[in-house]
Length: 155
Image (tube, rainbow, N blue to C red; front, side, top):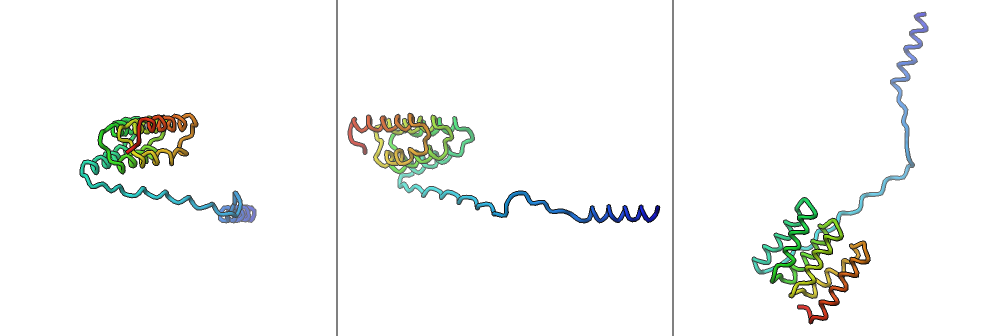
């Protein structure tokens, strides 16, 4: 009887001390994560008020809610006297920081409606239209740009 318990004990001990390795999946290694996107180049403006506006745009991009980001960027898009680099920065920030397509379109529409809407800002809008998913949004922005161009040359 002692011998049976001893044998059973040794067998249990051997079973618990030895582990088994279970491999789930293949031998292929996971692909590395995609590289992080490059940060946008710094915006260079000579006027301190324009530099302050760039800071406001960057601060707006850091707000927690899409609705508040949209509201602040829309207000900035309506601000008179934005230099072309600041307009481009605002367009790029709208594309990059707003989550909802309707929010992006709202800000971009306000940019197009500016009396001093410039060619660099127009280029920034049309070169990133691929970031919008709905054809109707893309068509609306292109139509607004065409109507804006009919009013006279851009700055």
